[in-house]
Image (cartoon, rainbow, N blue to C red; front, side, top):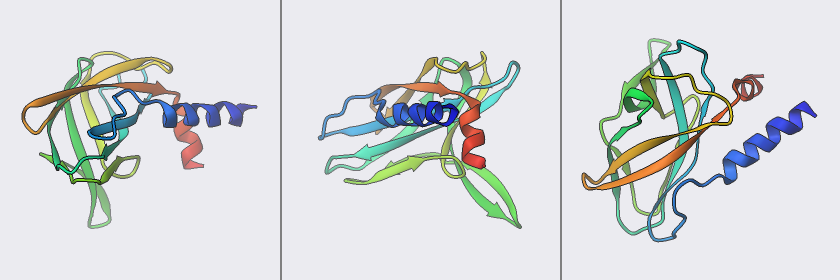
Length: 151
């Protein structure tokens, strides 16, 4: 029964589409973050970008009212140590998909202003092509889901 609960949450995340689903625009899908503990100062957010257009998009900046700073980070290995580096501008080419997922690219929220509780949501605002703003909601999921990914 316990595994069914986690399976259901994963399905919910997969089908949860906070932004519009028009086939002629950039779609941001399945945004989630793991719950945090009291006093935690940073967390990662994972989501997917789907560019259904004939135009390239560039994510210039992002922000959230629950953190002092929001950045897109990539991971790389330097002398057998995994490190993160800020990605200044994320390009999403025409008809392409970009996945931000554990162990890879992700959004880092730093200076968290509150604890993230399972079942709640919070917004992230994206500035796209230096002009268009897009707001999405991020679903907070149980940290037990992370433990199931690691097992």
